[in-house]
Length: 307
Image (cartoon, rainbow, N blue to C red; front, side):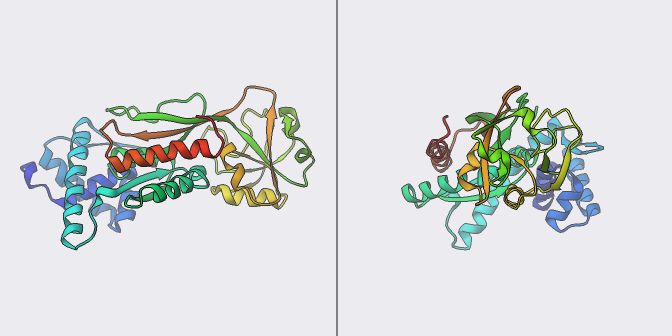
């Protein structure tokens, strides 16, 4: 079978699988059955004459040929979508920027950047999506977002090992802080010792293997009492406000905490640094994408966090 006869449907399915990382999640996003997704991928691989995906126990990974197909398919599909919009009389996408973000960035930084960009360049449209770091990296690779705001913690490993390497810019690096109920004894201080955190009740994100629980101060050598688990940072902070426990928080969220929450620093032991990184593919930036990148850098300064 000649690859020039590959269908647009197969290419769209392939891009979705590449972004989602599993056939199951791609099928759910497309409202297809998993077998239908598998058939489309098989058809595309027969046309290519080589495997495009490496099947693994935890999902799929693109082969070298898969990266080539993804890169070209993304260009083709974007052009087809732009043509459909133009034929429908809709505005061209030349002034649209697609950005992905992790939850903390969507609380303060991203809204401020978008508001500033709207004032300075009202013709530029920004669309955004929240996601985990792995999902956002896949979205970048699949051409579904132009920029991604990612969080990185020590030891600051690369986000992936694919080629070409992502272009990464650290917007800020800051210490992790602690959110405590305003009525808690620790709330009387601007900074507390790490020893004061022993025996506390914690509000954390769901466990992800052997990594530290998100929301618990890293490195505590005791049996932890996890009073509540929540993925959403705002839910965690409202639980803190209700006196249900403590949680870690990015310094950039200080401006968005609800009443009843106090943000304090932690002394003692190694400082837990967190980086906010702007990631993109190493391609020349369009003017709208460059303008949003500038607005994000300015917003970091505006919230009082040094670049």
